[in-house]
Image (cartoon, rainbow, N blue to C red; front, top):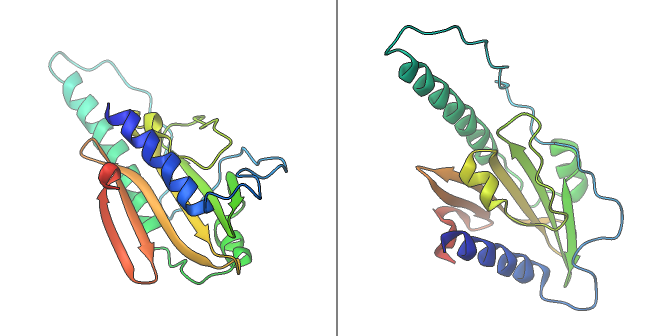
Length: 187
């Protein structure tokens, strides 16, 4: 039931951002860049080391170490995204800072861009509409998703970072009035 609420939340959020306009298509007709993009973090995830057979009783510790390393890498991505200062930046400034968006949408005078930050090598969220990858976030395949909303003047009006904290999808929203973090289904 929680997944359905998150999907419904994402659909409603996109419609609200897009202004529910029937005049322009929600998804642009130009080809979508499906490559993985995003910030270049100071600490890049390292390839997994080959595991040696652990003596009895130590395999649980190795699993816990790997889980905590994966969690720390996700926290690094989210921390880096939270440090962004995008409000009032132009589309070109955002493109220079973050690269091309994975997915874009236009409608009702607003434009939305989505940047994915996968948690597993080779993971790709196949959706071509700006939307939250609920299953990827819950499974750890997606560490974070950044959604940016531009106003009719092509300037960042707000942005949201979707990520998981203690098994719950959280949304960190930034507007001109400041930032707030709350559970994803709070809307």
